[in-house]
Length: 387
Image 1 (tube, rainbow, N blue to C red):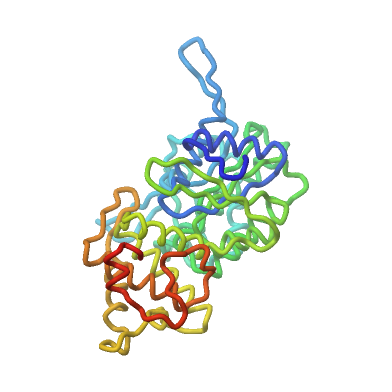
Image 2: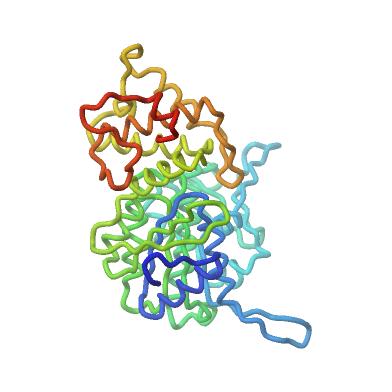
């Protein structure tokens, strides 16, 4: 792609990624939630499907093994509400994801991977499509437990990795169809330590010389992305952006060994949304994340230190409470709601004060910045729309 060139939709973006993978073994994508990462993984898979006329209709051949929200949905809990004892993670055996797997000693393959992360054991009941868990050292029929959401995600991830290892083995005929891996955000509900461990382990797996698979990994998790960038130095790295609903997609390539500082990209997005009067409720979540990262960088425990204090509110209590309340609503990124006008004014003031307090590149935020030593004329700025 040429600088400034965009891609009209997800199929076009998926097709472009496949072109990149002709010369590159791995592509890393960073994108905010709501950009369409999961839908992109499905578009990538669909591009690889080839319709073939068959005697009884249309058949399709696959070339992409993917991990995304659809993969996680193949597992769901039966909590045994009546007996409150036989808690099982159920597998959707109708999915082709599980076809032929249980002839390949999946328990042992998964267990070798799971022991890196978890302190529990499991058994797969193949006949009933169920997984039961128990603490290490206990018998499975004595201490049946429901694992936490994070532990469940780790188990599903290790299940997927075991399949990836099979796909890398040329002796396993069942997975010779796999040419591409597409992995979308495998670390939901994990703490930062496990996020680092998962990224490092995944990178080591993909760097195996015997692997011929081409891989795309997309994520909104900055730490996970940064670890992958450091571990997979030869990967092609992109920041995926879609400025507005219905707009085209742009790819900003990340050059060098140091990943792009995505809090700056997020700030630029918030700034532009403020300029264009496109402020939605979920923008408070983004603003809070930026304040928290800045506070952590400067060694503070609370993001409130990054909020400018006013003469009539020396502790910054008002704006801190606003951020706390307005960043914890059930705000959908897929059905965004405009902020109330009063909240827009608060948001603009907090953002403007933040940009003026910290020395970000003024070329990125030209209108928002107040000249050094000049009075903070918030009312005049708001009246002219220059916030």
